Length: 269
Image 1 (cartoon, helix red, strand yellow):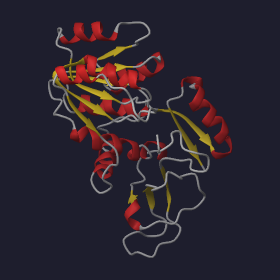
Image 2 (spheres, helix red, strand yellow):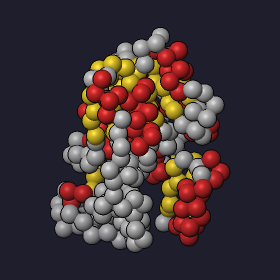
Image 3 (cartoon, rainbow, N blue to C red):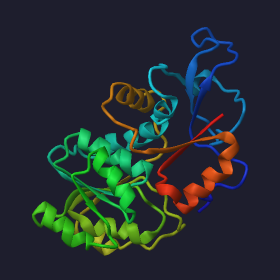
């Protein structure tokens, strides 16, 4: 697509935090620990110059790698708030990378009757259980639709969340596992510019579909920080590796190759 994923060389780094070295505004002092939300996804810099609207003061009460998860949880929360109330409903989360794991945690936190995590990597599914999944499915070992029918008493899922994206096959699978008049939420980015959706399934099931991107800096991120600081969301199952900056190449290779059961790799410099 026009956005070109993965991003071209020269724009690495999605989320970051650091200490203010100099400030021209009164409410943000030098030495303050802040989250920074880079507008161009170029977090891997020694210094950033930014307007105060793109930083958020954070308490130095938890390990920095845990506080860093504020950005990602905030983005996921933005989508979660737009989804139908999951209380007492069956929710399926497709994909259990960092994004999917946060959806799993939030749906459980919001009172879902069941949270069914789907992924082809067993080590991710182990993390899913720690994040609140009531059931896990590996599509390479189980039939996804039949397993979900067994869990839901044959009704299929009230809510399906696509936290994977990538290809149209996953999107169409979301339509298949949603119940009649169910809701499908898309957070993952499809790499196909004009994907061939199974419109008949979507149409005949009277499904409702939403997409979500671009969290509200003034609402979603403060909420996410509060959830982490208060311990309502445990982010530690995601944090599998913390590497020094000189090992950045190793970190990228681990992420691409899914080496050493990597889920979320943090760089410190």
